Length: 491
Image (cartoon, rainbow, N blue to C red):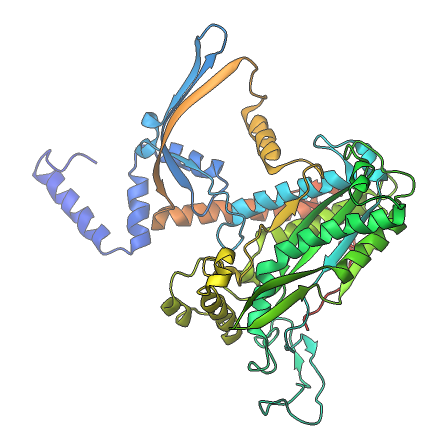
């Protein structure tokens, strides 16, 4: 179309078009803008490169690569030639509720990180399959009866101190709104629940130390000496139960003192590891800071502790694959999976307007109230109120368990580039933040790109031969894809 100032006919056509656009909805107006954008094809390439990221980060700037020896310029990139003079990058948010494409990529990286520690690869020797290892689940204790999926607590004669029935007697669907909610909200120990979430990371640290102490007892050596003859390597992921409390799924492996490349001593077999893990889980505890608001609290793991020896290895590689997939799927979830929110709470007034259940609102409110106590200031409970008090990382590992997220991302970047970064080259750059997120029409296109990729992966899983397709292993028809792990229902 000619410019609006080329003549009367051009002005009339321009005004007619503007009037039509003005009556369109917000999304349609933005789609019209995109259709008229000169760099539309390049913008689509950028969004496709992010996988349809829901909230990309835009940068403006340049980078230049030089030969380190001669100082000669090898290549240069500048966003001046890009649409809007900016470049779109992935947000890298791990939460599926915030960005599906980036969370899927993070889940794949998590799978490789966990699987490498069981089967080798990614810089981990293949002999790691011969090391004793177990899969365990550590749960939280009871803070009061909550409604269960399926057959709930059976009815009992009498009532609680607040006049409510001691049981339920009903059958709740798996996704029922009452599942995870207290049978009596006044009997429920909300401060204990929040304090347990806040100290869960310290409990895990104490658990690891106690495993070493038990190994020292079994080997009849000193507590400091045992770390020079055997090494405990582990990776864990935090999952929220429906009642809003975290529990841990973990893989624990015994190595020699040099890590994955070193076999443990002959006395450190699978039976010794199982004994050490069970003993540590039952004996470890952490004392919360005392306060007049809730008294004194000693925090422990719950009685539901599942420990299973992993017998994968070369004879059954599928075990490691299934366990890795089971652990990795929880890295894309947070408290929102239990019915909470996935964004930080900034004020007490905001808590009252949250679109959550009464139980979740009570937990967030308890975090906010306890966060105002001086003796709990170090826990930063108000900052982690949306996480129901848990401020730890979703997935953590010991240093030599396997590879790292940074290494996996670097490997993927080399694959996209077509070759590893050349030795003897130095890259310098200058980048500035230029925005985040999509406009309404852009969001529609990005969502469609993400949906198309997801559909492609589904088709590949349905029709491809058994093997790795789209980040998940396709098993023969009727095969059980779940690892052999125990079920840890809510209280």
